[in-house]
Image 1 (tube, rainbow, N blue to C red):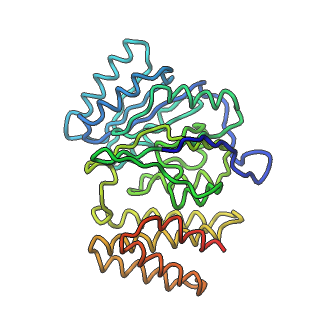
Image 2 (cartoon, rainbow, N blue to C red):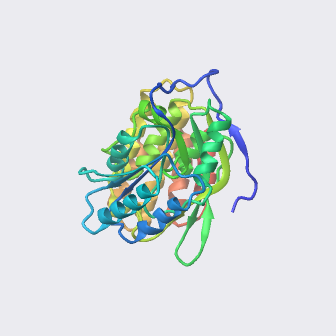
Image 3 (cartoon, rainbow, N blue to C red):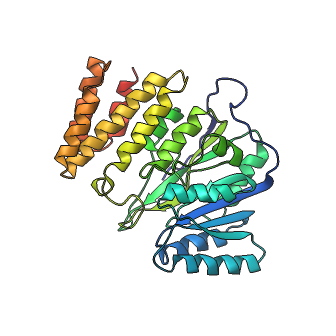
Amino acid sequence: MIQDMTEHNIPRKSGKSQIRGISGTHPGITVVIPAYNRERLICTTLQSLADQTRKPDQVILVDNNSTDDTKAVLERWGAKRNAEGWNVKVIGCEKKGASSARQAGLDEVNTEYVLFFDSDDLMPRDHIANAMKEFEENPNLDMVVWGVRFSEPGGKSHCRRLLKKDHLQNHLIQGLLSTQAYAIKSDFIRKAGGWNGNIGGWDDLELGLRILLANPEMKLIREPRVEIRVHQDSMTGFDYKHRAGEWETALDEMERNIEKSDHPRKIEMLRLIDYRRINLAALYRKEGDLMRSKSIRQKVLSRTGLRHRDKLILKCAYHYTSLGLPAAGGIFPPLLLY
């Protein structure tokens, strides 16, 4: 657990953010939670929301075509909270996938700020209050980002280790802007493009990159403020091959967004995308999908313009990860940036 809290603003190209909210939204914050076949797991998530010391101004619960009683659970919870003075709306999303469900929720948001959460995770009692306190103390903030704690089966837990004060690198390698890790101005995330319904795995990684490319004014709090429960039925699961192809689609889209941007660190970001690809290839190899691993590895190493030193670094990263050795993200990406 990270004991000390470090706060700082993201470096800016100019005195103002490139994206500014438009008037007309109601003050306050909305919590959006999508769910698919979560009739049991979501109960503790909803309870952690009900226990908040400051209730959200709006809650959007999205049932993503569940085949169990998830929708009924959401409707019962919403009816109970509305009777207590909450503002809860339960909607359905026919298009399959978490990103589509999150976007359906975003379409219903009418508050100035929005916070996305997953249906199997937990927020502490003061989570909403702490998020709004940051915005109220600094209305110029576009987003507030915090650390997360991953709770694994058997009682083990770990926190995301941020490499340094480099938000782009932390996001592309460590997933800084994962779904549960921030609250943001609703108009900012909309103007950044919102959730891409064509992305399956790593949809939050893809959206987070677009948000960072828009140069938000950000406050980062390293202290973990939410608990992500890692289990077999989680969105990502325990392996990569069960959703093979989805990760590659996200990385391809991220590369396209970087290529069409005018960001001064474009080349560095593309090298980090190469690292994520080679790391994915290594994970496929580790899981026994040798053909897919070989295809991705060859694609990365045959890229036109790849420096000889980068090729050597990527080869080392591939073998290091495929052997299951730890902390590859802290060793190899920094070497690619020089």
